[in-house]
Image 1: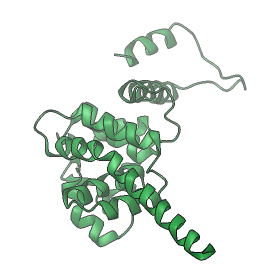
Image 2: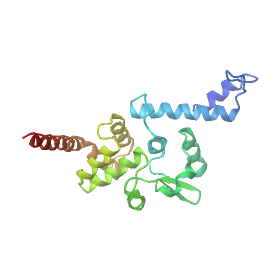
Image 3: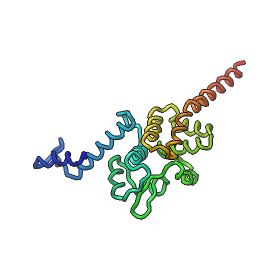
Image 4: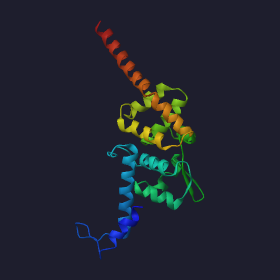
Length: 211
């Protein structure tokens, strides 16, 4: 819906130039429109105009869930959505984030990535950390959640929790990941309590040292 009006305005002129004098091509305009629309959509979904702290993998995941949920999409459709946030599909085949069957692309949820996490042993993006946290939450392993979020500086990171809430809101009722997210978010204070208890323990040891 945004591309049509943009191209209509673009077509009214013999040429459109950048400040440098370089002509703007139709393909550049399309890329600009897709990027602008995706950023606008993400800011609305997150209820926060500042999305600069969110990596492209996480932006892509959130935008995909909002647009397609768990539906598989043909490669060209997936590629266009990926380009809008600067995400390169072909660089993520082997990390458990995407699944390709023939020409159909799907994005994997937390449960579907469990084996991949065990094999990789690392978390490269915000959505990786969030998915791993959901798996630990399902096992009621608050210690691992605390350590994971602390190590990646997400325990008190408002953007991280906004992303978790936004994904929960865009997923349909009854979906497993939505239920996991709701439970994980509900337990947020208990992870903070673990942080406080750690500080208290350190304080007690320090006091013992003085005594």
